[in-house]
Length: 529
Ligand code: ATP
Ligand code: MN
Image (cartoon, rainbow, N blue to C red; front, side, top):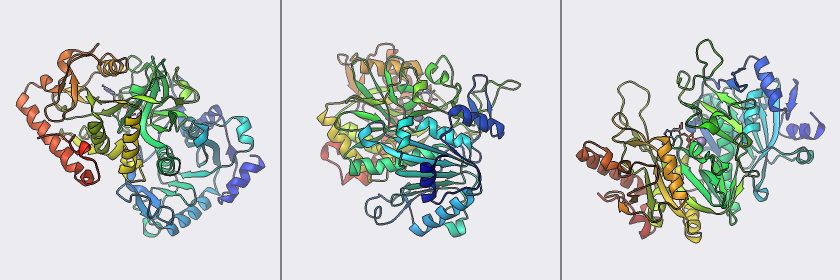
């Protein structure tokens, strides 16, 4: 490691007595992971690792330091859990003491593809595969840019370090701690790589709207040949990554974007796709990205082979692969798109109530954005079949440090100013709830989105949903007409009506906390019982 980057490390207390690997290539990181017996290769040359005890994020263990900067600006809630500065400082010291006896992997990278908002990051890891994740997911500086690289933010990540809740101010042994004053994220006790990416997303969701007048969004984005950008909001599992990978459109990004006065830019340099039930037929772009350089998490092999068993949930349902954007054949580089023309709200409604495609008025759009609804299928426990509703403001509450109203207000202004079409897409159940009906077929969902994007729904007849009010097209190219109105797909119509009212009730109850702060137009878009 050359002098300048080493100095930057010493500034934050890192001066390990063991080798410090700086800016290794994906091939080197892959080889070292295999040598250390921390990972294996599959038949297509991707690196497979296990993230250990944690195979998903742990929102209850993510803390934000409450200090002069954040005390009155952060919206303290279940996802923005305050931490006293003394605990952060103590943890910083403990973590570097731990890492100073270890071999380290260090990477300089950045977030935000639009140079005006670029944020330089230094990631320090305890193992090579975590560092490969940083290579894949953050943006990669050129050799020239590395010459004068000054990290603004630091991530220090040590999966093997365990906190002591009795003295460390944590809930349990794992944690992610964010300090806006120190410009540092400390991660310990968990090897789940997603904590690093969503940690940076969280800080951008604080900095960009507040200080740079940029709307930060939990969405994917792609652009058509005519420069028409589409953005897809949605909670986990609703289809952001899957549906943004469209061979007819250029991919901007699959998860985190900013909307400026000029257009949309990706925060990241890579994708983090689910691999559960992945197939070459249904999702060729993602399937083909599983090649050398890709990092596949928590999958197992088909017995006696080195082929991934994509159907296996033995380790977790949340199996994932990270890869640089360039692994998708039509990715935009740099990933900056023009002004959005269409917005899609994705929901995976496991109750089977919401229409698979519908058009929203501006008031309905704001109502749905603030609500942030999806319904997850019940866990894998036997006998549990009732779906569980989630309302997550702005389709991303766990990552939003500011009050949801701040993001909603910005979106509302941008939507109106640029006259954007807003659609709601239910990628979830049809023909009945989970257990009775089935998930909307992916080719149908793709056809609905394509139709909306190509203006094929501009001149068809619509009907209003009787409870939720959104306008449902009566026909859509490539989609059987019967599935367009969800009530038609249920054998028991009375059961549909009852469930629809029940879901509407949940929307209304959830919205109570926002009701006093929104306009009459938005309130009027509430479902009607
Ligand atoms: P995260 O925020 O966790 O990354 P995401 O919104 O990116 O979540 P995806 O990774 O796109 O979600 O997951 C959608 C999953 O649902 C994929 O595994 C996809 O194959 C599956 N799926 C099944 N039917 C559909 C459908 N009709 N539309 C979209 N996805 C579908
Ligand atoms: Mn995704």
